[in-house]
Amino acid sequence: MTGWRKSSYSGGGGSDGQECVELGDLGSAVGVRDSRAPEAGHLAVSRGAFAELLAWLKRDEPTPDA
Image 1: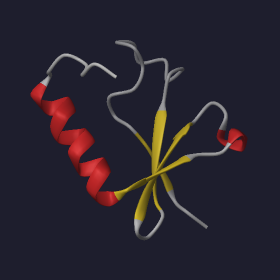
Image 2: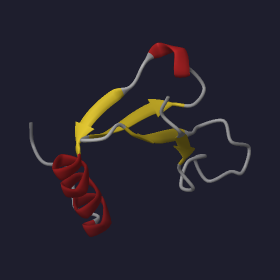
Image 3: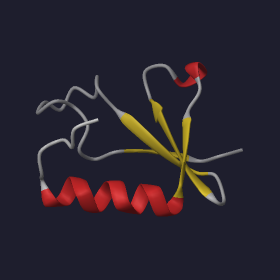
Image 4: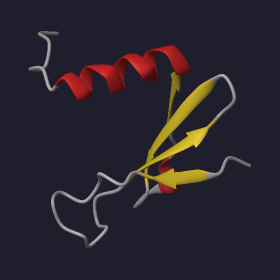
């Protein structure tokens, strides 16, 4: 069973805990899910892609055109 951990940055500026993202160690991947609806499943992202996502978020750049 995966141990899930809530993001300390979730909440939309408030401390009510209503908007939380959870991360889980899936071995070769990182799981991402909505803590309000864990039964809905999760997104599995490779560790490399997750590291790139975090680096991009930390740079605070505009969203790239899709």
